[in-house]
Structure formats: C-alpha cells, structure tokens
Amino acid sequence: MIALLRQEMRLALRHPADSLAAVMFFVLVAALFPFGIGPAPETLARIAPGALCAAALLAALLPLDRLFGADAEDGMLDQLLLSGLPLVLVALAKALAHWLTTGLPLLLAAPIAAAMLNLPVAAWGVAMAALGLATGFLSLLGTAGAALTLGARRGGVLLPLLVLPLAIPSVIFGAAAIEAAAAGLPARPYLLLLAALLAAALPLAPLATAAALRVE
Amino acid sequence: MLEAQDLACRRGERAIFAGLSFRLAPGEALLLLGANGSGKSSLLRLLAGLLAPAEGRLLWDGTDALADRAAHATRLRYLAHQEALKPSLTATENLDFFARLWGGTPAAALARLDLSPLADLPVRLLSAGQRRRLALARLALAPVPLWLLDEPTLGLDAAAVGRLGGLLASHRAAGGMVLAATHLQLPLPGARELQL
Image (cartoon, each protein chain N blue to C red):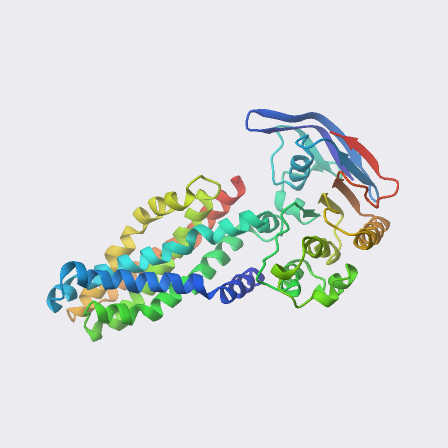
C-alpha cells in the first residue's frame, strides 16, 4: 500500500498541472459569487460558508475520473488486481493519494477563497478544518464512484451525478460549522459530525470500491 | 501443475471458445496459436483470474484455482498488450513499484534485458521495443511458478528475443510454467502447441 501511495505521489509531482487545475477551479468558482450576487460585504459573508464548501467539493471532483481511468487504459489496473495487494488497501491508497494531491492543495488555497467571500478571519481556522474533513469524505466517496463508473460510457458525467448527492451531508455540516464560527458560536459539534461522516466512510467506501473493481 | 477442464469463454453474447482442456506440468511451455479474435488473449485473462470462465474449471495442483483469486494472483505474472508503464516515471521507478510488492531489485531486472543504460530515462522517451523489454523485465524481478505472456516478442529485435529466450529457459529450468499467445516464433524449445 505504501508502494502504491509512493507511486501515486510521484506521478502527481511529475504532473503538478492536475492538482493546480483543481485549485484554480476552486478559486475561480469562489470568485464567481461576488460577481453574481454583488459585492455587498454582508451578503457575501452570509453565503460564504456554503459557497466555500460547494466550490471545494466541485473542485475535488475534477480529477476523480482519471483516478482509475488512466490505470485502466495503460493496463496498470490489471496489474493492480494481480499485484497480491488486498483491493481494499488499493482503494484506500487511491483515496489517500486523491486527498493528498487535491484536498490538501485546496485547503492551502482556502484562505484566498475565504478572503474573496469576505469570511471573517476568525472563522478561517474552522473553515479549513471543515473543508479538510469534507474533502476527505469526498475523496473516499469519489474513489468508490470512480471505480463504479469505470468502463461506463460517459463515466465522467455519471460520476458527479453519483457522488454529489451522497456528499450533501458534508456540505450541510461543513457550512454549519463555518457559519457557527463566523457568528462566534462553538463549531465543535458540527466538526464532530463531519468527522463522524469521515469515520463511517473510511471503512465502507474502500470496501465498495474493492467490490466495484472486482466486477470490472 | 495447472489444469484446465472444459473451459468456455463468452464475451457479451458471443461464444469465443468452449470445451478447452489442457494440462501444464512444471517446466513445460504451451504456445497458444490461432487467428485474430480466436480468444488467445481472453484465455490468458481467464487463466489470470481477470475474467470468469463461462463454463469449466481451472485447477492448480488439483484444487480450484479461481476460488481464491488473490492467492492465485500471487502464483502468476501476466504480461498484457498494455504494458502498465507510466510514461512520466523512469524505467527504474516503474520497476521499483513492482519490486516493492514482489521483491527483487530493479537494477538486476533491467540488466537481464539489457536496459541498464536506459534506467534513468523517462519511459515516454523509450521506443516501443524498449517499452516491451521493460515490461518483460518485471518477469525477472521475483520468481513465480506461472507466466502468462500475450505476444511477448511484439516489437523486439533479434538480440532482445535472444535475451527473452535466456529468461524463459532459466524460468523453466527452475520448474516454472509458461503460457504464451503468439503469432511469431518464440524461443521456447520443446513447447507444445494449442490451436484455438
């Protein structure tokens, strides 16, 4: 599993454009809101929590269809199936690699997006924690989605349709946490709920991914 | 000992082959011959456990090989048409991933196929024949009983075919089995043939 993670990170470092594209997408989506809604600081601060979560999840979806797609095309998927590694660990390594190459860069860019949406600086820390948990949840769900849509025609379109509805709870609790922090209320309960989502997906999503890969 | 009993393969609604039986003992080699589309590659995928047989059984030392696919996978190496090489990684890095899983050292495997001078080049700069050799170098990493090879000599020059011959000979001398699908002459002396 460490070997697979190493290989995935190596590949991501050779192609930094993929991670960068997701980050740019995130920042640009966040920048669209002031244009669409108007620059009134109060309005922006009001929508900032939800907009941040939605933009981050959409950006994290971008590289998902290549997660197994590239391996399926070049024959690596067959070799992974025959590698002797338990498929659950393959799925976990893939999800972790997706988070490290997409979720983590998004977190680093979150202050830029938060500033554009006029989120109070006091809430930035909670915003990063909430986005970290939410993108982790999406990486796990998305890995299962990517495995399921592998080999389907127009899998790239099917994938968001499959994954986004399941990701709704993470938007609700993520936005609620950031909103609470912005209003000076304790955000801890919402962060704990997000962490619970992540904890539930951590064993379940890799099992689903492994089952989907085996059927291919 | 690998034994196939009445294997049948179906892709979609089309039957590709049926009633296929053969045995392979340690040290033996079997060439799969047949026209394009006759099911050579499908048979190799089936033997690797990547494809479920429509009918029939595959036995390994008398027990059902496909009952535990993960265990079956550790007994074999599968060389497919797609070479499972990452273009942006170097030859050594590509092998390094498999060496960590299976054991062996990339440098020794590269030397077996005369690839040492290319060890630090990204794979995207290699020619088709050199890529094929790099895929074959995976076989030299760590010994397993069964090699499933799909057109192993595709794009290889005479010297590389000779090196593959040495690799195959030492594998068989150590009791390894080889199944190869091919249209070309393979350096497998005494191999039996199976017409699909």
